[in-house]
Image 1 (tube, rainbow, N blue to C red):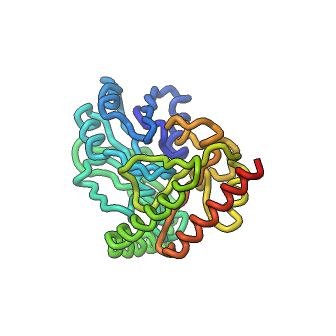
Image 2 (tube, rainbow, N blue to C red):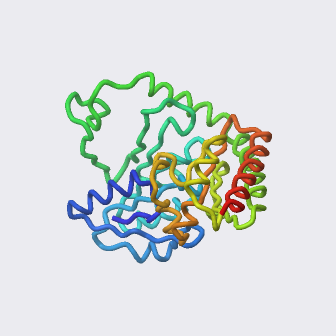
Image 3 (cartoon, rainbow, N blue to C red):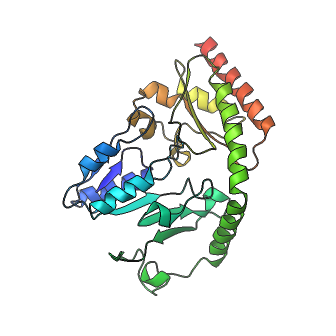
Length: 289
């Protein structure tokens, strides 16, 4: 298998488990902007490569990976391409047929739907994709995941998808402008740096602050703003983000990082408050040290 060093822990932990079972996996490195090298990816394929796993958009930096090119490369080497599109679906235009992906995962909660319900797109056609049942007994979901269906959750996912599609273009532009305003304001702080490439999701901001301690920063900021230093689901960890360390950040700088996401309820006033509050906290911590 081949995957990217900056994948979500849900993917990396699963692959690590498969490695313990005897599979081999190549973990593609990224550059300082979090980008992969397509040449390096091409060189990583072997005659027995089964699968390429690469996320559509990184959950910490917002980086968009070239999934169409990745899918074409996987197809050329008779490998399946699986993409974690949880962060991207509902935020940017995605077309499974145009991208050429074999399997795509999405989740309702990332587009204001109910938590605990998700979907897996599986390409039809040749070669046929045969999956082992996740839960057996009953045969629901065409034998892939037995158990009583979560009908309210499924309906909620569908409605959330419909609403997101309807407002996607206008909301993407609005958040893009707000995110850029937020970044411009935060990058005026001495010792700050943006993490990520120019090709990113429109609503994600990742900024590090040098020469301050990460834990006091996060504690102070979280009194007024809901932020994390890495993946939101790993926010209680005292370890630096594996995404940022893979991009070359030292431990101290990776820990002194804020990952901010903007959404439908975010206003211009909210961004002004965030810039002012974060600036004051960072300057206070620098003065105290």
